[in-house]
Image 1 (cartoon, rainbow, N blue to C red):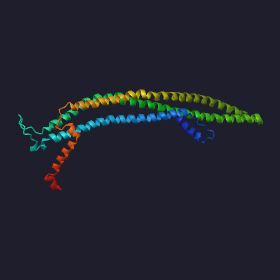
Image 2: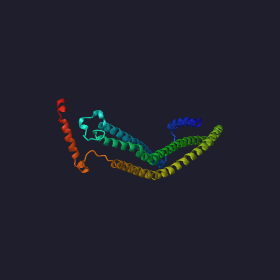
Image 3: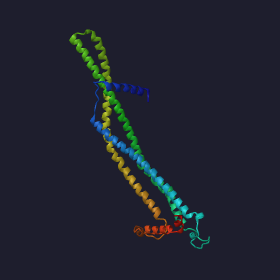
Image 4: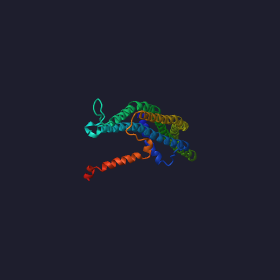
Length: 301
């Protein structure tokens, strides 16, 4: 804060006390501005939420891919850790290098490679446009809102200065009128010097008041007009931003689907129809039942 700004802050602090204690203090009211300010504050709050949610969306999406990679790495280790091999892992397929061990390891490894490719190539190509066309405009909008908020705060200070000077002017005017009445009615000639000083002070305050009135009314009028325009323009910004958000997601999920379906991933021959008929659940229940019936598990009870 500059020295000039510091002095104004100190003066306003003292003026606040005067305005609260003065019986003649008048506070100007502008219902039209108040309605616009309420709308802007609501819009600003929603913009801040949108900015936060978009940042979380980008971060969580990247975190999801990282978690998925880690999960598949564990699955790949589960299939391919040959320190964990059993005789049943050997398929009895004679090859040049001997029996083939754990064919499923190739499937999990292929899936891991696909996810790694998606993370390194597909995601950056799509998340960057999402940042540029969606996240950045919302952040810019929030910074514009902050500028308007500062202007609204400035308008509040100028309004306060205007009210203080108006209160002071009215008080001095009443005192000058009382002195003039006393001189004219009672012939109090000895009060003429006092009246002269009072009128001089009154003239100075009038000049300050007129300047404060001009600054306040000008800023108040511009803000009322421009807040209306600003809130109307929000659709011109949000419409293409929202459209871009939807289209980029469509492309992102489409690319992910293409990458996964173009691979030769297949563990068993169960069809989608069979899975929809809950046959997968039946198969899992059957396997878990066999595991549960093992003597090893029953002995541990």
